[in-house]
Image (tube, rainbow, N blue to C red):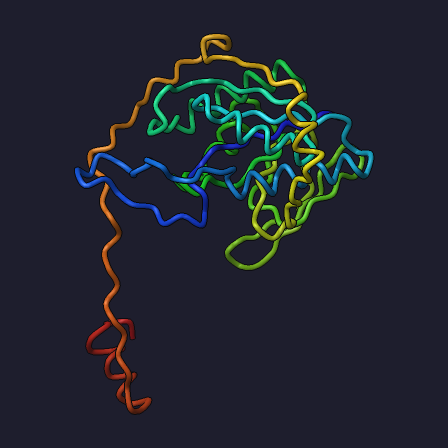
Length: 253
């Protein structure tokens, strides 16, 4: 069984994001970029399935700028077999919208024929949490989102997913789309020998035109601003004073 894993190049999670002075977007100048952490977990899970003998090939795909090759090489160094880069933008500040990404991924899925697509539940730059669900709808496949445990049993993927009320265990028939959560696993670090080997692994270079998909944006960002600063907390001297503040000032009780 093949597994397809989409990966996205985002600002590294350790970097403090800054907004441009003119409010036109996020400042990406000289900023460290890395693989989206949720996608990294998806790559790790695909590798573990291959180590168990369930998966025969892992294909990673990225949609964005040419620099996304670095992200794909990281996935190849972790243990993926080959990569596909769909160069859909020339400017690093351009973010391809989820629907366009889902349409491109659907075209790749039809071409490659994987039995399972493992996605991060969301990207940490725009937090859309939409691509996996859109992809399932376009393909007409089963889907399981927010997955914290995964096992493949015959033709079904059995997952534990995190919901508002706790945990939910379900079985979905494959082929399926599975979006993964943070608690699924701890991704491995790529060893130096594997980093060297990754340079020789195949990477196909594609464009949206190769798949007949229009990636022109349908949304317009009017302005980007920093989040409002939080007010300092206050100390109270008694429970009654706390209740009074919650009732009279905060209005929550």
